[in-house]
Length: 194
Length: 254
Image (tube, rainbow over all chains, first blue to last red; front, side):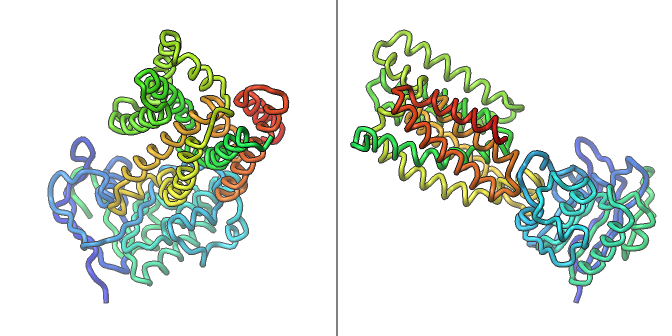
């Protein structure tokens, strides 16, 4: 049985000043919400507000008490020069390696800074995705991924949602969002939301 | 050789030779390796200040380093970008040199701290260092996961509604006090060499974090024992011998 994880009512978020149009949505467990729109409409800001990083200027953001969040940002984890293996990275967040794509399974004992950019991105994304959480927030997760990576990510998100986790995906990749998400909100600057 | 005269200093330094390289790995992880020099200079100044005030130098050094660790966190916003460690280093060095220059009592200890002479350590020093090394190792093991998370996923704490400051504050305190004890035991640069070089090699050569910690500790241990025997056999100050030995090892295998 699904339960409500977050609900936004006339939510306006920002950092120094309001940066998003008022927004209404609700997300239940096991559902995937896509946030898309042009650059600068506040997709990342909205995701940051859901994570408690950005400010809520007006409206209401309700979260289920005790909600466990996992957040993937566009920042590249600074692991250059650090002797941290992929397996250790997964252990840090409590993520399981079951279901990893074959092109990563054999590289788990390598240092992260010895992996390619795409491999490292997927592994750091996986560490967030598979961490114990009720709600997973993803910011442009398909960046740096090739077609095989995008396909694998889409399957992984559907499996994760099937296990009851709620997911919010911010992406400029309309095709990916349409294929994966149960509900999609297109953010617009003028304040009208589709 | 293994009379109390040398055995006590050897055992005192041995524990530090294991824990300082591990601490160095975490300082390097946080891009704070300069902290080792900063805390060491502040501890030296605190020890000399305590000496001229008729207090125990070791306690003065530890208190000064602990205050520096706490103060750095309180002034974090104003002293961002590594400025805190540079200012602590300069301040500690200036106070220590001025005290040594103007107080005959402080001059001898000052030379010992900056020359890196290990052989003055006795029972009291070992009684301080041994439990602290055990505690510091335990504290680093407990803080390890969160220190790594803070580096790789800085948003982890806010997303999980966890407070990061106890981890950072606890680490700063452990680092400051460990380096203060190291400074009192093997001098400013002897301690710094054990913090910096093994961690630098481990970060270049290790295949994982865990193996990096083991590699750093092993380099510290072997380097320390070799430097102790060399310095003793050649009747040279310990700190410079250790530093040169570790530099040579680093240039060969890093």
